[in-house]
Length: 367
Length: 201
Image (cartoon, rainbow over all chains, first blue to last red; front, side):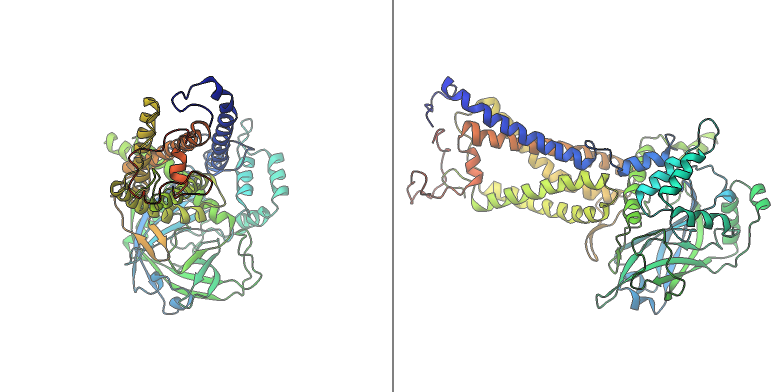
């Protein structure tokens, strides 16, 4: 150091400062750029969770409602495991005799005023909280496999199915380009065309679709998928009945059934074999895979979602207890990301009083 | 106790360890709210790391109280000294606030606060959408503020190291024990240095 300590601003010192200041500036800018890139603010356009949910909203969200599967009702009941379930997974839910369940039955789509009977896809979401405070959340659907294998495919499907402003229907050219790029969707389209329509939420089977790992007491793991299979007997809902049904047909049917007693489903756990697609939810596993009845779900009551316990719950299927672990299924991770964005947006709208329809405040005011 | 105007070993360990953890947390935080592929893994790291940082900042505050840091150089312009003091208060406030806000936010959103395996923490706030929304926004906004402060802290540290060369960076970077490359200090000088080494040392 040549500058006298009592004169730090001496001109002789100034020239040496600029390289150091430039280096400091470069380090700060590089750190900020890395942060911005990680956040998805800068760099090549990447499909992020907020962008996926933007596409689901399609520019017209319903404030306070879930961005997908917006219409539904809260349900409550309990789960009882079978004796064999504890051998599959050490999760507390399979050891405890009974676990309270808070859940939600819904229909697919972003419109909270959609017509119940016309919905091709129905869903059941559950939250099971065991006595040690651990939680298992799952969100299942009536389709047997997901339409596409990746979040990119799902995004492309959303864009391609957007109605053309001129015709009010999806542009057939864009739709066929999407199908060509993501041919796995043909399996889903075939299912949607041919699968029978059951008459109730109660006699519908709901499939977890994504693969998970069950971990037993010895620490050994197996890949599984699970389903809720109804004990209520199947009855069809014809096309004519679907057209004439009340807009809230499923809710009314559910309430009528619950007045006569609880509704039941078997939790069926299917084990994968080596080589089965455990990271592709668009492909079903062969029919002959080992199936285990792991317990019974019993639903006893329902509440409107505007005021029920399910409204402020995010049924994020990646919230699992010890004994259940995730797979590398990309749709599973993407669901966690997208559900979180949807949850944050709607809870913010509810907090700011922007969602009178979703909270029932609108109905209250009209009274 | 600090000696030779340097932070002591525990203070330096806490500083650099927490610096690495906080940088990781900031990137985990913005990464996991954007990423469609990695959210579950990132949030499983974010939660226990955040709680670990809460414990560490409490240890650090206690240690700082017991063993005060070396004073700033006497010739530091008053405005820079004020900026240094204020930014340290803000850094400590945010290091405390961020994990508490995150924990409270998960509680208000009725999420389990999972650490590892079956181990999870209890809720510290009632389930409430308005409270959740407020806490979620605060956690996000203050996270960006913390990143900005960390950058400012980094820039100021390098300014001390490369431009002023006044020993402030050294005080955190090195033990202050006598080294061959520098003029040897008295080996008996174990008492806390009353002032920092003179600038231009």
